[in-house]
Image (cartoon, rainbow, N blue to C red; front, side, top):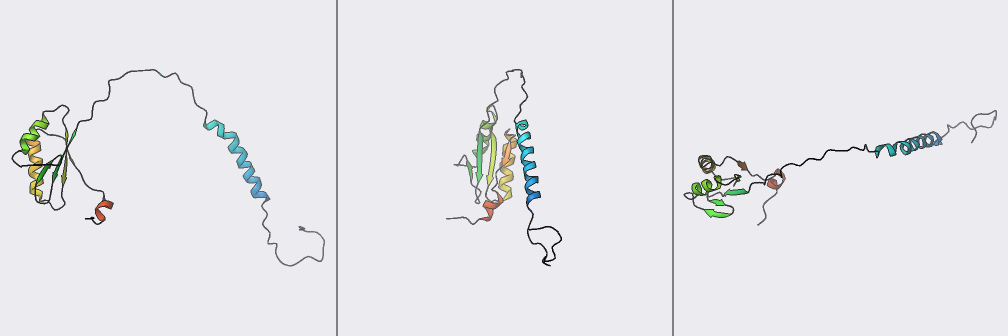
Length: 146
């Protein structure tokens, strides 16, 4: 392949070959730069850190799962509980140290009145930590298998 010259027998078509030499030169330069800078990324500063002791992390309080089905029946940690016995159990749980977290799980079709009564009973009996448990949107969109 000749670039220029004084040959009168040259062809009139444009050159269709790709010159990869500049690309290889750039890649080699980048490779050399990475080889030189790579050891700098692993260089660590040596420090003499002070040592200290702290109190152990406090225990996580237990959680009480309070479930309400569509019919309004209440379950305390998956065990059925009568509405009349619920305040006594809540008062007993409120006396524990640390106070347990009450996780409220309610069916989608549960009447709000029942949920509000359970929340009011929890507040009246001294339970201050109340959380609502829901399903992620992807799980709720999938049809239930039976």
